[in-house]
Amino acid sequence: MKSRTLTCITAITLFAALALPVQLAAQHTRYRLIDVGTFGGPNSSVREPDQGFQAISNQGIVVGGADTANPDPNFLNNDGFFPVDGFIIHAFQWQKNVLTDLGALPGGNNSFAVWISANGLIAGSSENGVIDPQFGVPQADAVLWKDGKIINIATAANFTAVFPAARSSLANAVNNRGQVVGDTINVTDQCEAFSLPFCRRAFLWQNGLLQDLGTLGGPETSALFVNERGEVAGWTLTNSTPNPNTNFPTQQAFIWKDGTMRGLTLGGTIAFPQAFNNRGQVVGGSTLTGDLAFHPFLWDRGMLTDLGTFGGTFGEPRWINDSGEIVGKATNQDGAFLAFRWRNGVMSNLGTLDGDPWSEAFHINSKGQVVGAAEDLSGEWVDAFLWQDGRPIVNLNTLIPADSGVRLISAPDINDRGEITALGIFPNGDQHAFLLIPCIEGSSGCENEASTTRKRVNSTLTLAQHLAIRRIMARFNTRSRSVYQIPGATDPNR
Figure 1 (tube, rainbow, N blue to C red):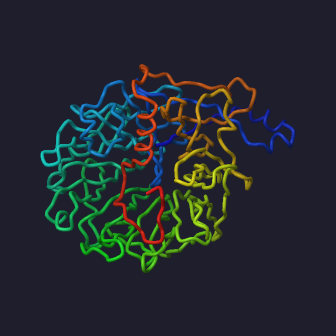
Figure 2: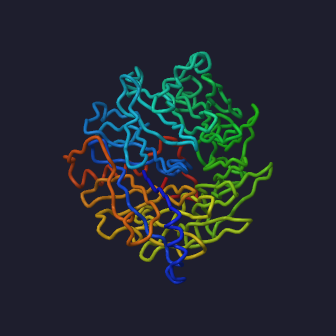
Figure 3: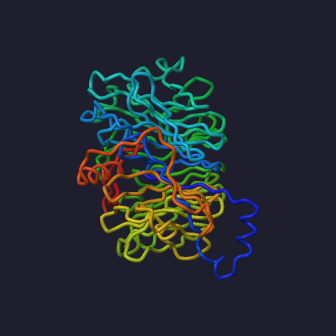
């Protein structure tokens, strides 16, 4: 889970910045640190960037999930769609230093927001109060928050007709036109035939109606992204026959346009998208023929490009901006994971932080600023970083007030104003979402700040329990795909 930033530079501030000595102007910007807070529980977060997401808008609005003070009565039978830490979690919207509880569907406990469009539409999921009769876990529905109101996508007039076997649904993204994409969770004989308890089925919701996007031959598909053109990217199974290398059916990334789905792969049997921009460019990861290596790829106007690695067998993108710049991570010949930026056919190594052997880039904005996380040898995030202007990456913990009392371990998102979302850990193990807003050191707007929250209570969990929960939450992904063991291309984060 992670979270990050906000910015506002007035004409006076801009003039002051221009008047700074050349040496000072060349230094990295400082940041005002804002604790997004919680609804009374110990933790808050934004969605983890295992697949690209948009948790902050260019207006500085942040979305995610925050714990309430109420224990989750279904904690031991969690449905896997929401972070697990023993507390009921609610979707939030943070704007102008106010944290708003977006609530849940009637009868439901947990909810989470995963995407905010440029015009403020929010996509996510909420439990609906129904316990699945077969699995004994709470069911969830895809939802859209618009003007502060929750819309249940599963109540579409044609939902049952289109997806008669659906038990739950999840929303993954929304565009400015109000088109929502996501998955229904279906229980069918076809799923059970190859030992899956359920199958995902991709949908597009618009004008109150759902459309099944279909598959490329297999029983399962997932829609992860929708751009402003109404094009959709996701992944699909192409058959139901397990492959000898992966023991699972062939999976391809896809782009869906005007009712037609096109599969994307570098030749192996596993491929999925990681991000999608408004030019229709898809970036993702794919095994090569033989499934012994996994590389990042770019699909652009009918051409599929292998972006390569730094000499290792593994690489994976995380984001692409509308200029076609791509960031992610790739291994070198020694197997070290290194953050990269790909631009105009060239993959650049962004380096690592002192003391942290690995790095991973999560997001790049329209100005080319990159944020991510430094990692230890186990793949755990340990420090959030910023890269810009061709300079070495910098630890964001050195650019916030020294008395903040928090360690920023990851920076998953940055908007075009340079505002950053971050995940931070307190000494007692609590994790919170944070927002970093560029400021001038020494100015009145550069101090720490806490959000206006509804209520705060002390956690009753031990530090050991907090740390265990953080590890669970840090590996959770609402939009998770099936996880496979890729021979010779193992990523410890999987």
